[in-house]
Length: 327
Image 1 (cartoon, rainbow, N blue to C red):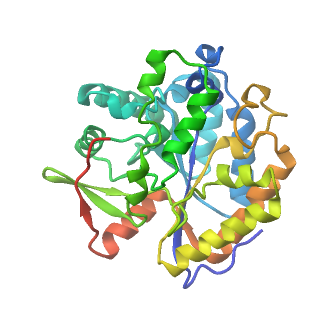
Image 2: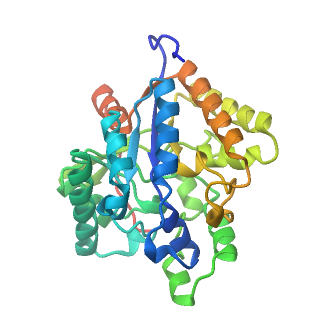
């Protein structure tokens, strides 16, 4: 398959958070995560094949703990060998990273860097916090370590609803629940900008590329949400995506869209993740939806990595400057 000519198209970026089975089980409070079960050998070849069909180069944010395990080396190296940008997705994938001290964050980011660089031979220049977690301390560490961009903000009003659903369905102790009190943020997250901007960190600046939500309504449009909608109707899910992309064009938002490995597998492949939204959708149907979605996006936008998106935004015009606040 070939995309249409990229000339005169608005830009968009595409990324994938390489969250693994164990991280979902850990966050759910389910047993067995300590052995670090993995589906990378299943999911990675699937998404690499589809991306190759559409001639797309994206950013893949890798969890350091996965890079540290030899059983994942082949799959992770395949991502880098295919030419995709490698980003840092923390080491332990704790969504409460915003509660860490600055020294703990430094250790977390550095340890992930070490293993990611060893396996992929790429030094990450971009970071995304697990569960969209970030804090002034996280941003300071990233700037100090020479990162060019962060991509952790998720501007939506639905964070408290998502957190309530999560806390109802998980099996966690009171202590573990307390760590997750700010998970997915509050209603104020919906007031965050959709367009790129820069964080002011004392003398430093760090470009922020938000994960795009639907302009005006600020509801999610990442692929996992499209998959969830497809449990009701594939046609409705794809129409939802088309409307979101149309609104991006109308409001001149350059969308930064997000994939997960769960968009390429189902409970047929990974029965232990049957609790995760959208996992009841058969694998063949998921792959067809991803394929069609990428066709829609490729036909309308010139798709970049998040790093390219950040450079384009920073070079093209003077970005708004914001001061980060604690959650």
